[in-house]
Length: 341
Image 1 (cartoon, helix red, strand yellow):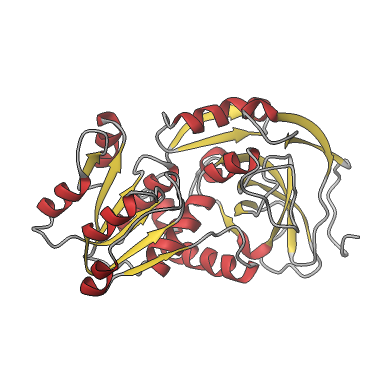
Image 2: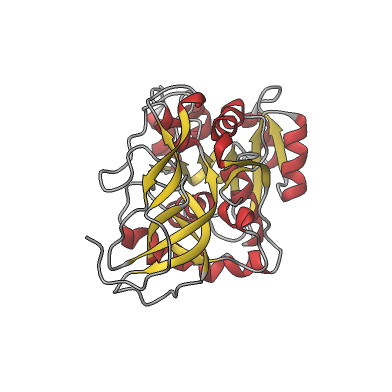
């Protein structure tokens, strides 16, 4: 049963996008579900928009099961909307506050319960659509590039997948905080976009060898940090591309989990290999990231120095089309679902 809460006048059922069974995008269907209950430390958000991310695609295919304590058939890791109820222990928020939030699942729905520490105020005058494009990518980049990767001002960062949602966030965050940014992307148009966004050099991985170009750009030194979502055969090339004391941070394995590496490279250059999956981390860990973002990044978004990059907006009923676009990799930036009429 829910804890004692402040109640708004809402019905008991909501519209949600559900995964009817593992499969192609067409398995995403609109259905009615009970509005979720929420704990004393949680708020209930009336969702205006939800971001679409590759983990949603993996969950739809049956390859990324959600944590046991969250919705099993409603995907969605980031939302923006208005708080309609608050748990008895909530101290940071009030009914009516506009927020964006990172969630462990259940975001593709009209209502979503969120731990209060994983909510952030919508920065500046951003719309709900723009705000919904922020949490999953900005939490991921902060945790992996700045916490695990320890990127410092003046150091260099190579981002694989520079035109992805993660990529466009990482380019802007690293650039704004004083680092030199290089990226790889899959077309000349995407490369040009990344350079306009702040990358010093974007490398078309389909026509160019990033290891050779990075060595030329850095006078043989290599880069200090690499953010990699590719895995597979990129891994030995990443190790060759790192500078001494460099850090390779892995957040996905789009080309596979298996590879062959030369361990002597790690020893000789004193490299650090690390990686993480954010979804399974506890509330306290995610709340700490939110605190860091609010302090270090949210003012830069509010001032316009960092901007959301939204490629396409789909009504919730067309979630299958949004997933088809995501899998095509033709987009630049984020894809967002709208729950507003």
